Image (cartoon, rainbow, N blue to C red):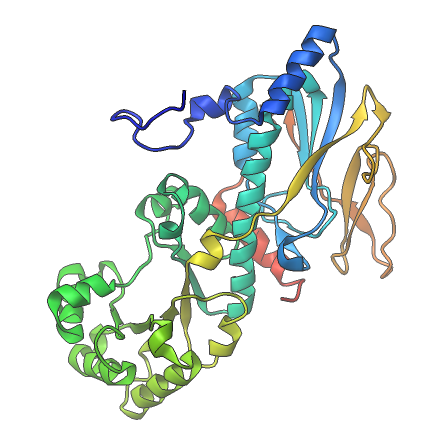
Length: 396
């Protein structure tokens, strides 16, 4: 019988206990383990995670979700080892990013949740990184918590942050990241107060210096008219204006931004910044960069297509083996120190010389031995710095 929502379990999400107990797996893994157990088969295997292709045929992605995958395995208290690239690593299609070794019967039921943790987090981090790359040095804020189930808002925002977003809007997410939540004001405030200037004055009066005063200027009137009204009324108390103009009234957002910037500059308000939100992605952002100072990106990041990782056995009892279409044998991912190119090679092979002439080195690290996390896991801020360093090597 299907479980119904109840006062003590009001949301249709799996609890940590259910995930750790293997209740979120696909049923064919449960059945496989029953068969193997009944037949007395218990193989030592190596299984690898990689994506044959990346979403929308993009040339690179950002690896994320590793810490949650390691935490899950550690809670299982099973004897497995994990080698992987660091979170925040820029990788490509076919690159082996994660490798697990141990008795298949111990971890086989967890293929589903392990892939889920890596696939979705990497997809979100990748979308954020592509927006980050498109925006250059302009601010990128993650506004997408409302687009997905609230239970996973912290995961969404963590992935967006390590992908390169400067801040996140959800309160719980920001707290976990050690950040102040980022946001402006909603249309609801302007509508309830009844006037953009009065709403902005009230925001400034009540919130004060706890947050920059950013006025939402597209609720009632033309954007350039409202921008000048709030700039004249707030003076130095106004940090920026936000444009979230609906598509039905927008025309060209670039033209609107150009007009607003022109009028503000002409009237002595050059210091007032322009912040844009609403339907943005890495394809639209570059066309707005000449006038915008920052962006709030929601749907494109929060509901990003997952990185379609697969987990495949490549060794059984120390013998290379693989299904059709996959390369047998455990591998390592080597990256060129000069140009950043990557190549999978057999784990015991020497790192090859890159086509550019540069030396390569294995970028896998041993994160888990005997079922215990073997390295100190970095803070999100450190992971984000690694992502930003990797983005300097790639083009959008």
